[in-house]
Image (tube, rainbow, N blue to C red; front, side, top):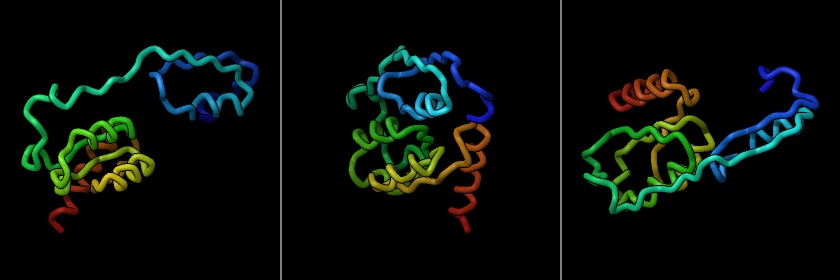
Amino acid sequence: LRALGSVSNRRCLILKGQGGRPFLSDSLIERGALVDVLDLYRRVPLHPDAIVGGLGAECAEYAVVTSVELLEALAKIMPAGVHAPLVLIVPSERVAQVAREHGYCPSVAAGASVEATLAQVDEAEKGRYE
């Protein structure tokens, strides 16, 4: 967050989804900013019956999971034992820890960028055949 420069006594508006993490607002407040937060949307997961095609072990070897919220939704719809061969590509150790708690095998990328995610898929693929 240092890239934002001095924010002391500056007004900042954070637009986010309902229930999002407070890291940015907390960090800005610690640095003296006057922060307002506006929740613009609410994430509502699909009902499992609305997912077409199902999720079987043979449908994918890798899944990109970008948040704990997405991981929790996946865990609710994935039948027990089906996810054993599925490698989750995750953007952080925080998401990886929750994945492990659900019995998944996470592979942690160097961040959430497309480049970092693709690089981690390559790394995970190399690890499968070594």
